[in-house]
Length: 122
Image (cartoon, rainbow, N blue to C red):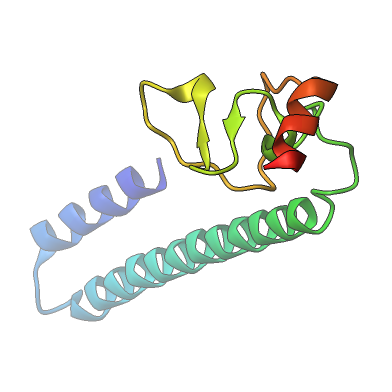
């Protein structure tokens, strides 16, 4: 709405004569540029504030990620699907995934006592 009024004023100035209203044209151009710069500054300020709060949220999540107990019952090394010699999980045989000792799995099942004894004997 403001731009429409400013454009109408520019058209009226151009119709009356260029020499008399040169100062007004440059003043309107300056006002439009100033409005653009202020809007750009506000947009950049909003983006930087949003990024700041996003970083704070990520830091909080990283700081408190071990506060709750894991969902899994056991570590991968203690799961009955994990082969300790090959470091491979048989739950994911099709993908041929290698798993670390300290990983968790949502389908982890503890090894039986016999399996643990057999591993300790080897």
